[in-house]
Image 1 (cartoon, helix red, strand yellow):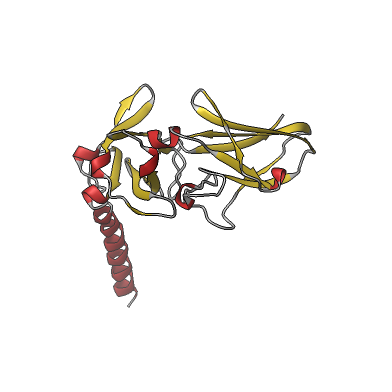
Image 2: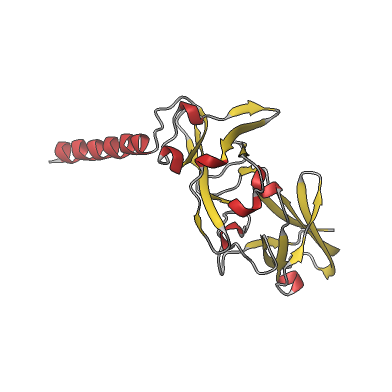
Length: 226
């Protein structure tokens, strides 16, 4: 009986492991890949990202993205998949806002496997997020969406207020002062962050202002005290 149970357990584990490998096509060579409707969310060698200046990059034609009606305009989706030796990381889906692309015929997708966290958007982003405006709101400004400033490769919001070490604040960023398109709201973990899905930070020191920074290329959102 014990031998039977042991054999059954091994068989189930074997099936689960290799079933997942097949599901995510992890038989691919190690590397970074992009998945979406154009490849039925199963990347191939054609969808492999290339290392360039410290980032993995992939040029995705806008025509390859399937856009459907969203909360404002039309939204398409993709995700980045890291395939390593005995390890994989699968990013949560990232939206692309068609109306924000203007005349662009492609978007550049960026990724860093070291920054990626399985199941989250962090560690990968795209050039669409570098276009247009971003707004920030949180407990520190009574949830009033305020426009962020574009500074080099990041968006920055700063508000003057006295902060004590240990104070915590919920916050997130959005595309417009009306929160739309909702799909592009970002809480520091995932896009499409709806009601109650917020970023959170705790002041590590006393200060006189709060700064929020968003790096769109790698979907990194952070806040700190000055």
